[in-house]
Image (cartoon, rainbow, N blue to C red; front, side, top):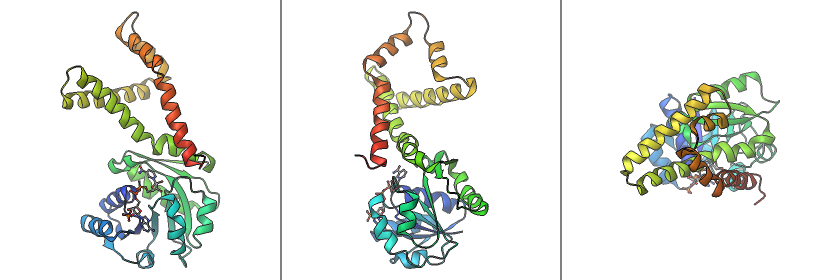
Length: 259
Ligand SMILES: NC(=O)c1ccc[n+]([C@@H]2O[C@H](COP(=O)([O-])OP(=O)(O)OC[C@H]3O[C@@H](n4cnc5c(N)ncnc54)[C@H](OP(=O)(O)O)[C@@H]3O)[C@@H](O)[C@H]2O)c1
């Protein structure tokens, strides 16, 4: 497929690298030329100075700019072919807004996360009754090699943005906290991070394997009068779970433009 990446920042580049590995040909365009040029070198794609040239003949356009830049990009996308797919990963930008700004093509709203880089991403695609079965199939074929794909009601996209889009960043803060606690008490940094990641992977595997609510597993690990329950008391005192819920709520409010 010919894929135009419009905005070669963190996410645009992540998609570009994966799709290049899968054999797609890239047409790269970025406001500052150097990023597109470098990504073209790396992926064997072509970079363009004009957005119109980048999109001409592309089967798919990925919008990888910041949400407030949609109108600049939209204005430059006049006269798209009706069959051209447009993937928007712009946080908080609705399908209605997309279709208003971008006249031709088939606009599809989605929310990926950065774990697409290692094919462990989560991409939520907004359901749209106007999409044909053929288009849905194409969307799945393009996204499934990058990780999990879920089709969701558009009204849930903002909370999904907070939970699964921003989520890896919050999870990294937790990983740091676990490892730094180990370092504080004498573990070498490398070992502390190694143990933290293995422990996290194990916890996730347990939740999958036991098909139980995490609370059931949490209690199995708490032996009477033991170390784990002592730790849980501290988690409650520091309101760690409430803090995580507040972080998701802050991201959610930002996504739906409330802050
Ligand atoms: N970061 C994430 O984990 C994540 C996850 C899910 C969704 N998203 C969404 O993905 C989008 C991009 O986020 P990001 O984190 O990748 O941002 P980013 O790293 O800042 O990338 C944005 C890119 O767009 C370029 N750009 C800006 N205006 C442009 C224009 N008019 N024409 C062409 N290129 C333009 C910028 O170029 P310059 O070099 O000139 O600044 C920059 O390279 C956002 O809408 C965000 O909501 C991000």
